[in-house]
Length: 197
Ligand code: ATP
Ligand code: MG
Image (cartoon, rainbow, N blue to C red; front, side):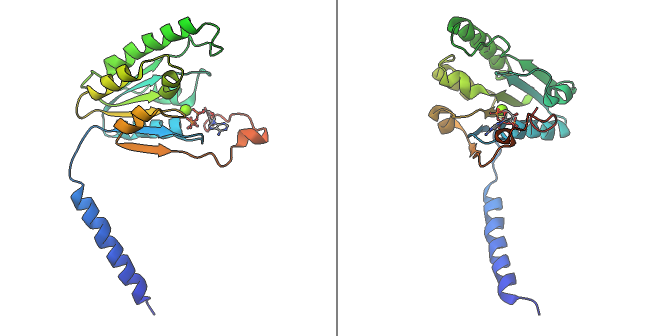
């Protein structure tokens, strides 16, 4: 016998969801922040790159921290037509012994990102691991937020990195914090190609 109360509950739920969908009738270039200590921030951003390419849109990617070369995402997405891929963090030392050089690298990198934020042809711009440059004080939060605010109206931006500063969270439309529950690395398993890089 069909469960009547279940189907009534589902019908009520559907009405609520349909009403919410009908109400969301605007389009807008979004700022999305993917933060937190768990795994899945950059890979989620690259998932949106793949989605955008599926519609034939152009995409810009800036990787601000690159501890490893030759990641799968760069090998595959970086060579797709319609993708501008910039690795901007090669000069970082991260031992703060040459803070001035790191600041100069960060600022040069931001100039490249800034050009993408002025480029109307880019549907999506990914600023991967940007949060670290803000948290280390290598880039000026106000300057970064001003450049983000001035981008073309329909351009989407995804920003990844742990400990997103409040100013980014405040100006973002969508913010997800990925919580670390378990990670294979802590069981002694090295980074796996196709999964971690
Ligand atoms: P991914 O690129 O896999 O989506 P992420 O962008 O969320 O990861 P990052 O902090 O940028 O995380 O770390 C990049 C690398 O570190 C990846 O190889 C990832 O698997 C690994 N990693 C992410 N989170 C953790 C964690 N909590 N413990 C150990 N290693 C992690
Ligand atoms: Mg990452």
